[in-house]
Image 1: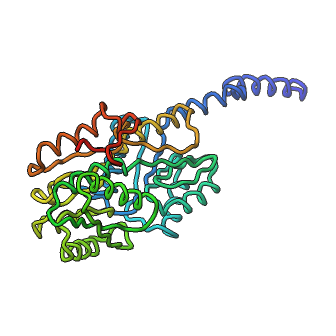
Image 2: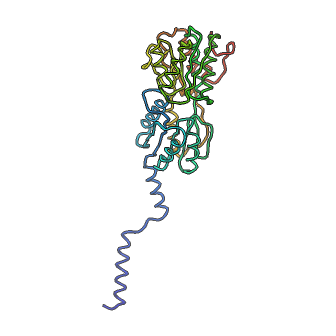
Image 3: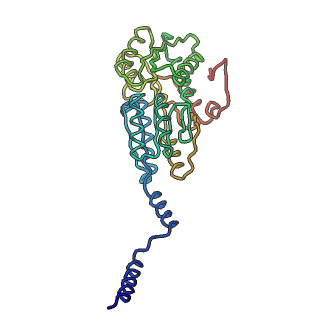
Length: 342
């Protein structure tokens, strides 16, 4: 076989073999990659400041996480990290979640704001949602609830139920959302009982059941016969149950921990928001911004009214919490400076 013929045969073999493994056109390859990405579940991360328990701030956020999983099923893969202190540890955890491929991360405590923004600047293709803060970026939104709407109604119940005219309030930090709650609670109580005084003790921690209990006991010793709290555990309601006083629970219905003590619960509900925002990411419709939900959205409710609450008080509070009330529709109803039927 001469050399020229051998070259021709080799070229023919190469062309035949090559026909079996042609590379796809660049546009087709891009479409295939996009289809694969669309089929893969969206990885979603949550960061919690306190433990996931039966009730409290983190319990309500985790209920929202579970609602998200139930609503979107295989379209998402959801994980969480709890007991994350605000500060350097939060930054590390948020960065780890982003590094692990979570493309949507919810950070659920006020003190996570700076760490969230810092990590977001390092991961521009990841979307971050921060609860209760006030700063945004191109890939960072914030969301909050008008907690004070429920606080006002809780104050009405407390103002009618107190016999000593002294209400006790265990609070974590003097930040805006906490101060709004104290003010609204006081205004609600004084709308039905102008003699009410509200005593506040600061714990310096979102979650410290021991400190919360100590603060509750101190307030009871100072004459408070109705307690409430802006802290994450059930300790204040449990202390009220132990000492035979009353309590307005916060975050969750805590009647299980104070079946005789609880006269009302101001509860928070995050699930609808988590589902909606995650759907927006999946559909490519997410946009940054600030969202402030309220009673009209079902994000804050008054629940768990105690059996010892007079019927007229219960009826009035439930009316204000209903869709018929101007309190929910955004109109203003004032009677002697307060929203009250009395």
